[in-house]
Each structure stands twice: as structure tokens, then as C-alpha cells.
Image (cartoon, rainbow, N blue to C red; front, side):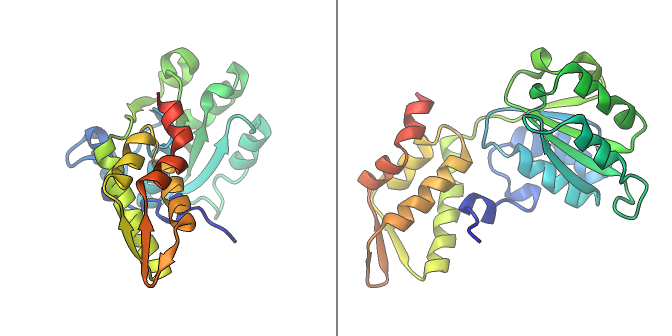
Length: 235
């Protein structure tokens, strides 16, 4: 079964997350909350590909909570009731962490259906949104949650992630990558701060390369071709 590079290289610890030092660096507030094990209801706000889902998964793992993931664009109140039915069972001995992506797609009634369970502490909610939560998330949820802003990944942080991806692909393919000057830097700048796009571009670049012996040339021209859409969108 095919697994995208972005999933294969998804960070497993907070130290592996790129570009969110203001909330996850040593001594930063979100990191301290996770390390304490006492995680409040939270709203993660920021652009796509900045690590919101990844951080939610790490939090569940580090606090030993059962993680459920829903996307509000396709989920319903029935999905929430199904999760609630598993509370206080062997499936969720420490309560559950519900990661609700794109919460702004839930209407007021759907968001209100969460209140009873997050108030009694049986569900810890981490909701994420690319929209300003102060406009798109209802006050009842906002007032019970702490908002953390995920910032666009800098080109420098993206380049670090790209180099890690290249090293992984070198090991997997037993080929030595020979990137042309500026090729990896171009992807880092053109991905628009979205690490998922950067990983996809690296994967396509590797697949399209022509091995010569045990070496694989990665050209700047190809790097521009595989990141064209991202560059246009970023502009």
C-alpha cells in the first residue's frame, strides 16, 4: 500500500516538529502543557501543512490518550455520539482526545453537541482551522478552549525538512542524491510554507530523476517543474 512521504516522515516527538518554536520550543507554553500531561481543550489555528494534525497526534501519544480524528467537512453529530459511546470502556481508559479538523465547517448545533463532553472532561478537544477562530468558532467552544496559532513554515525550516526527506530517500533507494545548486532551496521557498507540499515535491523529484550508476541528479529545472503550482498559489 502506497504511503506518501509526508506520512512516512511525520514527526513522532515535539523536537522533530519544524517551525513552531514560539509554542513548542524549550520552555514554550504548549510544550510545557504537554509535558505536564494536563492538556486543556485547544484550538489550533494556522495555514495547511504547518503541523497541526501532527502535534495533536504527538499530544495523544505523550499523554496516553485514545485519539479520534474527525474532519468537520464530512463528520456528523452521529460520529461524535459513536465516540461518546466508547467513553468509560477499556477502549478509552484515560478519556479520549478528539481531533476535529476544519471545525468551522460544523454549524452551531453540531459544535454545541460537543460542550457536554468537553465540560465534564471525558473528551479533550483539539480543534483545528485555517480560518480565524474568533470569527468562525462559536463562543461557547472558544470560551472553553485555549487558542494556539501555528505560523507559516519559514523557507529555512522547510529546507531542513527537505534535506531530511532527501536523506531518507537516499537510504530507501540506495542512491546518492546530487542536487543542482539551488534546487532544494527553490522547493523550500516555493512550497508557500506548506511542508506537505514540499515533501510531495521532493518525492516526485526523486521519482522523475534518472539514475547514473549509484547517483541521482536532481536538477533545478525539475525542481521548478514539480513546485510550479505551489509557487503560483503562494504568490
